[in-house]
Image (cartoon, rainbow, N blue to C red):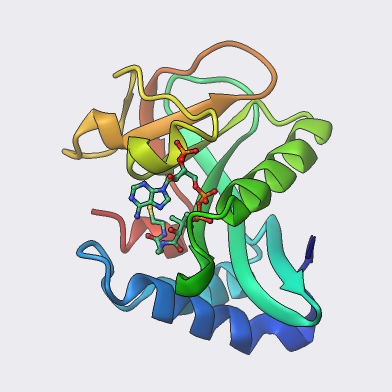
Length: 167
Ligand SMILES: CC(C)(COP(=O)(O)OP(=O)(O)OC[C@H]1O[C@@H](n2cnc3c(N)ncnc32)[C@H](O)[C@@H]1OP(=O)(O)O)[C@@H](O)C(=O)NCCC(=O)NCCS
């Protein structure tokens, strides 16, 4: 299996993989696949990586620019991230996230933020220390990983394609 950047011929598969992965989730709202297309159209798809196993895409992660009201430097949002149901909990999500974070760090990014469950993203190195907010969302779900610089504080704003569908 290799983690590689998306190509033009991957876009439909990425959308379908994402829709199927989020469909059973209580927080899934059916927009996650289209959201990646919107990020791409808006020029906000900073990184789009796929897990490719012998030509078959079994996972995907998107990164896009994010703002944190009281933080400095360039921050990015992670998500949507999806792994095909029969391949979940095998470390593929972690490999996708880590590959993207490594590239962001090389670019000099201050760090990466996301909305998600600590059980999934804690083991990947993300933390929620209560210093980040996203509307009225439980701050335990607002997680970050620092790559260069100091821990952030403030309100997180994601790219418009994500912001419109965030809880
Ligand atoms: C979230 C997702 C991308 C994780 O990918 P994955 O390949 O299963 O993740 P990994 O195998 O790298 O696991 C990372 C950690 O998350 C945990 N984890 C994964 N799925 C979990 C679940 N459903 N519930 C609780 N913990 C979970 C793993 O146990 C692991 O922790 P550990 O190292 O302490 O064991 C994948 O489960 C998925 O596609 N889910 C459906 C779509 C979704 O919910 N996307 C994210 C929205 S926040």
